[in-house]
Length: 316
Image 1: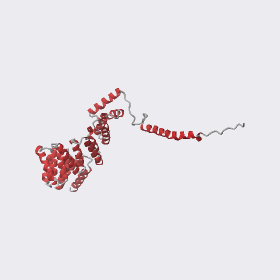
Image 2: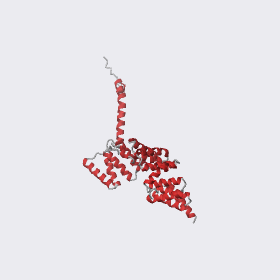
Image 3: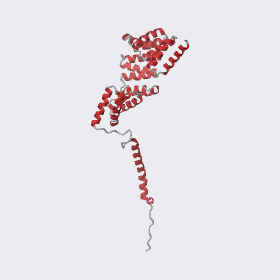
Image 4: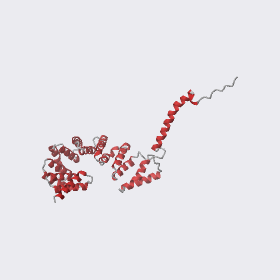
């Protein structure tokens, strides 16, 4: 019988092999992709987000250092040990909250807000991040007002009868020009706690801005009777007289109030407005100068001060 050799079979032509390749290749591809993803995230110990393994002794040392430096007010020194603790224990709400507090004192409000967000995700009592989470957004400027208001709403949702949460939400709405909504929240708070003075004054301010001076005066008068030297009440009374175009009365009240709270820029804003309405450029210049001292980033106050100074120099 002739010695007939069978042709060598090609590996890929076998039907069983084809089926195995069809099944295995996608699995191998996914496995490789997963390994690459883990590597990028640092799951093998080389990435920035890798969990730090600390011994019990090192953890205790860092915890003592973190707490003591914060207690002493040395926030810059507290940052690194606290970050190490957070990296080792990323779900520990104590270290998360401490980092948020540190970033607040360092003026790094964007990072503060991020850590308060983490705190609300991990803390057993997330309302302890309130009102700081909203304030962290608010301190970042006008562009972050919606995030601040949203944060205050989240705080209120955790405890709808919490009058402090109602106040902070109402105040943020008021400062962002949403006066009707602000008045509604102030009234909700007063329905729970009628003696909460800041809620009353906020409601009076909102009603003045909504052109409801009689309603504002009605809730303001009892506060003034009880606390005639309340700087907050005097500020609102000054606003009321300014709204009524009684500039002499407004100036008298605001001058008394600013002596009690010279660092409150609202008094200087209103006194500057009264001065401009009465053509008292010297007084307006003095008030705008004080506003710039209190807040060097206030561009509007700086522009008015510079304009008044230029007018003063030109008149000499």
